[in-house]
Length: 310
Image (cartoon, rainbow, N blue to C red; front, side, top):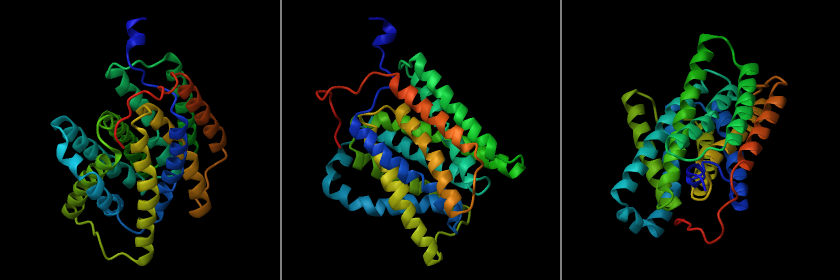
């Protein structure tokens, strides 16, 4: 067997259970963009509360079932988990504000470029990236470009939003890549708690330093913040943290491409942000690219493969 073949593959077919979980996760995160755009609070405050409220939801469970694990985390696992939390904060601090400057369709299209970043990171880490996977990413990327092109404005304001979304996609890719390393040894619950805690703490400091109000909202705003936490945060991000133990970060990032058409359709129905018909061929290219990439790798490992703690 060649040295290249002996390297770990950056792309593999996920187990059927992971496919089902990722479908739930994609449906949940597709609500994020429209909810954020409709919530009457500052972008950074929204990012803070979705993480802080998630901590309230999962904290008692982790304290009861995984308290010992948190104390036993090694230096490497602790450092990587803290880094993942910081990357998640950077993702929210760039992507969430982008929705104030550009449309939901354009923002989610550009942030979904993260599979390109994850493949590059995997290649840099010495993982094997099949040539067919690069073709699949190219096809999916063409769909992203088409979707962004039909909706993006040439105004300076939209350009700022597009740039923030693009940077947010990079940070999201790095968050997923680091998380895949940590999840080999750390349970989903412990990893998620630390990540959300670090993320909320960093965003809270930024909000306070920048004079962003964290309270005084209407009931309608609090309802939307809770919906964002229950959906995009707990059923979205947390589910993707779970599947990272058995599915590569590249495939997870590619699955997130489905967020684009979902968010655009919700925004069109709920917010009246109706994208042009160009979204249809764009979504088709995205789906085709995802299928090519997932089909380019080996099947999921057999049942005897070591599974990290949950």
